[in-house]
Image 1: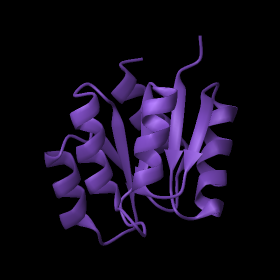
Image 2 (image 1 turned 90 degrees about the vertical axis):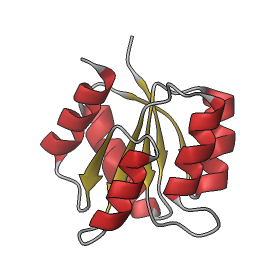
Image 3 (image 1 turned 60 degrees about the vertical axis):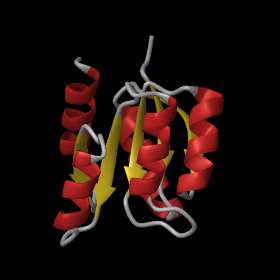
Image 4 (image 1 turned 30 degrees about the vertical axis):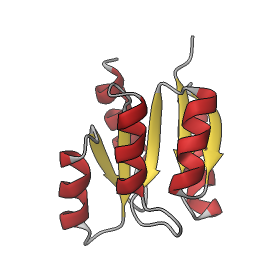
Length: 121
């Protein structure tokens, strides 16, 4: 059975890019969210195997959402997505429980490598 993934990013274009990479590689995208609070609701509703989460978003950022999701499910697997130059935020995200991070613009092989590593494939 395909691993179920939730994509969280405030930019529709970025969600589409990562969705294409995932679908081409046999993953099932079960939902999308455009901010942290939506991500938490979708996580509760869909219970995905993994979440790709943008760090900088309006309303609630990815790190705050990550912390809330970890309260709901301490075993939740989250990979953070960041633009270049956000190293400090990436470190915060890892300390908050993120399993890995991928840098935008997305490199297909790096995305798949991070997801397979996180899922233990």
